[in-house]
Length: 112
Picture 1 (spheres, rainbow, N blue to C red):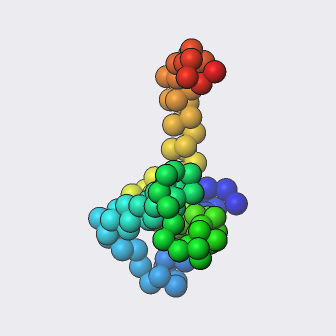
Picture 2 (tube, rainbow, N blue to C red):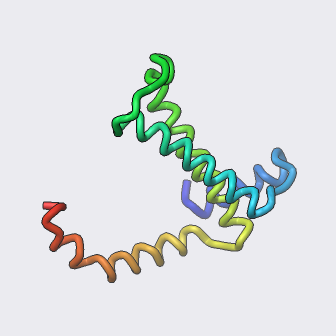
């Protein structure tokens, strides 16, 4: 699935199953909440934070996948609401990062 296809699929879902988009500010708050859920799992899987239960630890990888998908879904909603073509936006971001960072990362001793 391309980003463009994903944007169309999410738009169709919102307009049929979801009925309508939440406001942009509500979706921004939801996005922040979903990113927090990703951060919580990452802190436990890859950081020093411990899991509260064995079940939580067992399901962490699947939950991380689900939470990342939730972040992507809400981000797509916001892009659709604000008229942003995520394919074009990502292409432009890669060009910007390439021009800005082409030497920066190559010369970073921390990355060697």
